[in-house]
Length: 265
Image 1 (cartoon, rainbow, N blue to C red):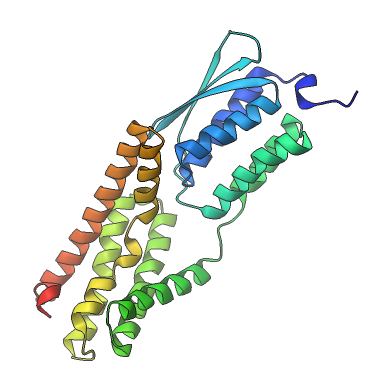
Image 2 (image 1 turned 60 degrees about the horizontal axis):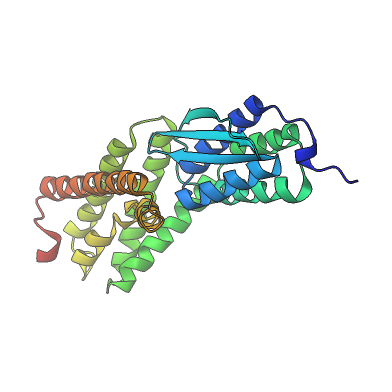
C-alpha cells in the first residue's frame, strides 16, 4: 500500500513548532484568520492531526491532537512583524496544498518554509515607481491636471523611498507613516506655492494616498465576517492609528507651509 504522511512517524513537538511559526508568518504577511485556519488545518490533517488555532493580534496558539485522540498539546508564538507581503502570503498558502498533495515530510516542509520566509522582497525600485504611477493616476482620477500628476508622482516617489529606508531601519511604523506623509506634503506644497498647477487642492489631497492602510481595513472586514471579532478589532485599530498618523503628517506639512486646508485651494 502507498505510504501517506499520516502513516509516517511525525513528532508532535516538531510539528507544533512548525505550525506555530507558519501561522505567525502567515498572519504577519497579511492573511485573514479564515485563511490561516484553513491552511493550518490542512497541513495538520495531512500529518494525521487535528489543529485548533487561536489567533490574537500579537500572539497565536496552535493546539494539536492526533485524529481519534482527545489529548491536546498547545504551541504558541508571537505574530511575525514582517509587513504586508502578497507574494509570501500566496507562497505560504500554496505550501499547505503542496504538503497535502505531494505528501512532503516534515523536514521537506520546513525547508520549503524557510526558503519562502527568507526570500527577498520584490525589487524596491520597481515598487516605488509603480506606487508613484498609481498615485499619480489617482490624482488624474480626481480631476488633477498633468502638472499636478507630475508633482504627485515626485512627492510619492520621495515619500515611498523614505518609507522603505525607515522601515529597513526598524523604526516604528506609526512614526514612519507620520514622517512620510509630512515629506510628501512638504514637497507637494512647495511645488504648488510657485503656482505650477491649476488643481493644487487635488494634488495635495492625493499625494499621501499611497499610505492609506487598505489591506488592514480589508482584513478587518474579512475577520469580522468570519466572526473573528478580536482580530478584526485589532486590525481595525491598527489601520485607524496609521490613518491618524498620516493625517497628522499632512496637517503639519500644510501648517508649516502656511497653506491652510486642502479644500480652500
